[in-house]
Structure formats: structure tokens, C-alpha cells
Length: 517
Image (spheres, rainbow, N blue to C red):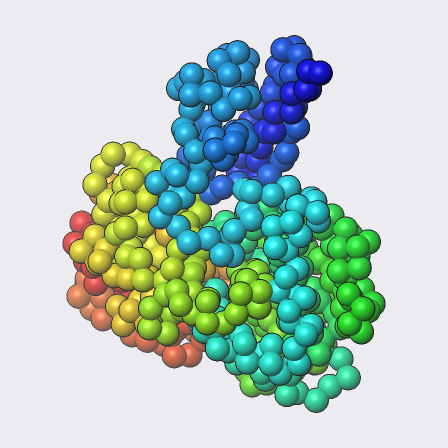
């Protein structure tokens, strides 16, 4: 009896970055080409593996593992199928890449938070559970809330936003707060330049965020959660809402989760594009239906947060890392990293870089390894001159600091910050005086206006840099610029004004010649 051949299993990303370069059209052409060839096909739409220069990346399942082809244009599909792409053939050139997991970009990573992204169908709860999904929640429910909190403390997990505050300490404060109502809020208002990991994770593995927030709710005694997601991410909004609905249907959200007695539900709220709402108290104001403006501290959100109740506020990467910590234990997670920067971090390479994308690796990798070894240097082929790490309020670092390890304390000692892990590359044609001016322009545009140092200081900063570049009493205005930076750093209510001097001062310090042009 002749055995019927198994359908070819093919994976095409539905990530927004892949779709922007034709992934949907590639998927349609593969279906049509398989039909024409009389081949059975099992097409799975996944998240992105993070190798954005190879998108659309097509993967084919073989006995040896998944074989990659990229980047595949819609017009390439017929020829690649005819050359054997659907069987993993190496003859399907020039797109043939070999085993995806053996590509240098993948081999150099330690994927914990992003373990399933690009691997599973993000709409399938079955796929998620088959790849160890909800194991962290199951283990958490066998522990007391205090034990869960201490596990997170022991792991050394720190916030993946700007300050790197220990996640477990924040949870411990909320757990100890007396209130009949507590909240868990996820800040997914990913507005930093060169950052896209939150979006990629939500589009590629939304259930892990749901699991992480549910563990947080159990640990601190919360019953309601909100994800504050930016309007510029419509695919992520749709993916997360679909995952929440599926989780409710399967009993992973709602009343009596897994028969544990835990009640927790989750809602998505879409922001209106204000950068300042990435700051936790501005986000809470917006969630309450108010204009997004910074609150004075104290009180801290852990004690008086959403609607005045104790609230956990973490960002996407922090919450999405919680399940792996609970599933495998704090010690396994803390075995990665260096010093007080434990575990892995997700770094994003963008700007003028040859190979842009997402890299998850242990803390301690150097800036140069990320930019040159993984990123391949500049896309223009010209020498790299500077990188900005940590978003538009991050410092500009020159090439002679490329040995700096990606480590919160090492960066702080160098007058910089890791922030959300965004790394934007510039070649030797960049005008660093213009970049310093842009930092002030950005602050003036995005300031909530509540405090004078930020609201007025940013405008005065633009004017001062213009006078310096024009040669108008340059020495006096450089002193004035330094005084203005002191004032903004010390007097601003939040990091919007407080960190704006970081890119300005680093540009003056490392690239002073551009201010004398």
C-alpha cells in the first residue's frame, strides 16, 4: 500500500516588518504554487526570527530541522518551488540559507524571552502549550504569592525600560500594600527610536505576555490588568486582543483560572501617540481617561497607582520574561549575565546598520560585538562613527567605547544607559551637533508641559545650540548649555526632561569638533 506523502510544512512570518516587504504576498504565492504543482501544503504564519534584512524569511520543515530561504520576493516563489524549496532543497538558490538555527545570527543568541517568537503560530494556544507555554503559571500556582515574589527577586530581573529597577522589589511593595483592589499594568507604549522588540513579541508570542501578567496578578493579589499599547502598532493590537479572547475561552483568563481560585482578566487600551505616556505615571493618567501628564512622586504607583490603588507597572519584556523564570527557576535565569545585570536582554539593531533586527543574549556582550559582529557594521559601507543606545534620550557613544559591555552599571559609569536596548547606528557622515539639537527639539515636542525645566529648557536648548553652531560667542554659550543641562537633569519631574541632557552632553564630549564647524 502506497503511503500518502506528508504535506510540506512551511513557515512564513506575519510580523509587521515582514509584511511591509511582501510576506503576505509570498504566502499567497506559495499556496498557489503548491496547488499548481499538486503538492499538499501546511502553511503556518509565525512571528519573525528577528533577521529583518532577510525578510520575508520562508522556513521549511525537514527531518534535520527548519531550512531557511531569504529574502524571498513574491516573484521568486514559482522558481524556488520548482527548484525544490518545499522539500528543503539546497538547489533553491540564491535564497537557500541552510538550517535556520545554525545561522550565525541565531547561534550567537540565548533566547529565553523570545524562545517561541518565529517558531510557533502566535494565534494557536495549542502551539504555545506544546512549546512549554503556561508552565511558569502552573508552577506559580503551586507556590504562595510571597514565594513567587521572592523567586522574581532572586532571579535578578530588572525593568527593561530606562531605570533598570528590580522587578521583584516592585512586586514586593505591591504585595505588601493593603487594598481591596490592585492592578497589573503593562507599558507597551514603545516610543523609543530604534526599538521594536515589544511589538515583535506581542505579534509573535502574545500568550507569553498574558501568562506573565497573570503570574504577576497572582503574586501581588491583583484581579485586573491593562496593556497600554501604542496606536502605531495595529497588528499587535489585533494579535493581543485575539490572544486574550482565546485565553478566556480556554480558561487561562477570567474566574477560577486552572481551578486555583485566581480571578484575573486583561484589557487592551490603545494610546494616542504621546511619547510621554511611556513614563509610568503619564500612562496611568491616560488609562484613567485624562491627558497624559507626569505625576509627582511620592506617592509611587506601587502604592497609589491606577485609580489610586496599588499597581504593578512593568514593560512588555519584563513581564514576558517572568514565565521562563517561574518555569525553570530563578537560579537558571540568574546564571546568565554579569554583575547585577543578570539574565538575558533583548537588543535591537537599527539605523545605518547592515544587518538590523532583534538579538537576545546574556548581559555582558560588548557594544562592538552587537554592532560589528552581529550587525555587520554600517549599511552604507562607510565607517561607523557613533551609536545611540537607549532611545532618543540615550547617550551617543563613539567607536572607541565599543568594548563597553551591555551592563546597566558599566553603562551608567560611562555616562550612558542601556534603556530598552535600542541601538541606532550612524556612519561618519553624521552631524553630531544636529543630533544634539534634535534631542532638544524632540523634548520640546513631546514634553507634557507640566514642569518648567523640561518645557522651557528644551526650547532654550535649541536656541543655544543654534548660537554655538553659528559661532555666536561659542565659549560663553557652551557654558550656558552645560548649566542648562544641569538644570534640566536636577529640576525635571521625570526622565523626559531629566535625560534629555544625556545625548546632548555626550555629543559635546565625544564629538566636540562638530560644534565648531
